[in-house]
Every structure is written in C-alpha cells, then in structure tokens.
Picture 1 (tube, one colour):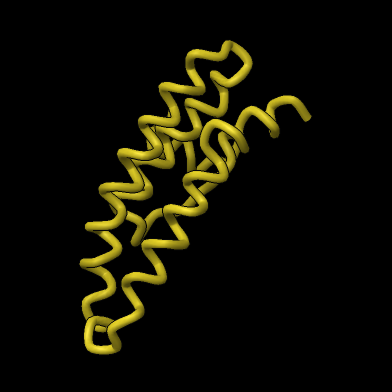
Picture 2: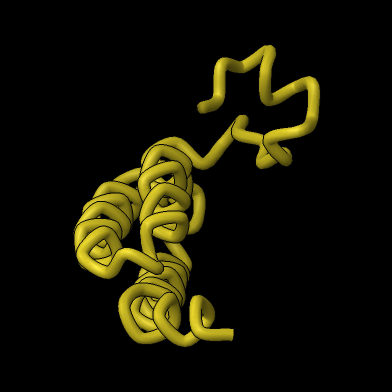
Length: 100
C-alpha cells in the first residue's frame, strides 16, 4: 500500500496526465492522424524524459527503488512503443530478450 502511494505521488499521476495530454493533442487535428506514429515517437521522447526524472525522485526514497527501476524500463518503451512486448521476468521470453 505504501509503495502505491509513493508511486502515485512521485510519478504515476503526472505520467498518466502526460500520456493523456499527448494522446489528445495528437488526435485533435484530423489531418495529422496518419502521422500519429511519428507524433507518438516525438511525444514518447518527452514521456521517456518524464520517466527518467520520476525514476530519480523514486530512487531518493529507499522504498521506491523497485518502482524507479520499472520507470527506467518504461522509458525505453515510451521512446519506441511499437513492437515491444511487456512480459514478466520469470517468462522465458524475458531471458531471451536480455531483459535485466
């Protein structure tokens, strides 16, 4: 429960707002819908920066270190979201991909 509160305050709420805002801004002009993939990658860069910044904030709290590690992993997914698959660490596919 405490980890959930730490995550919500230090990163979860703010990153959720960032994802929602980026999604809304990319869909407003109908003409740009075909360019949504490029827009997601551009927005993904800023969201990845947000993940790294919030990971630093979580690293400062000892209890938030596991969440910070997850945020760093999500930064890579935010930059290149297409073709990524999120799996458990115990999954054999995670070992094959070299996920730490």
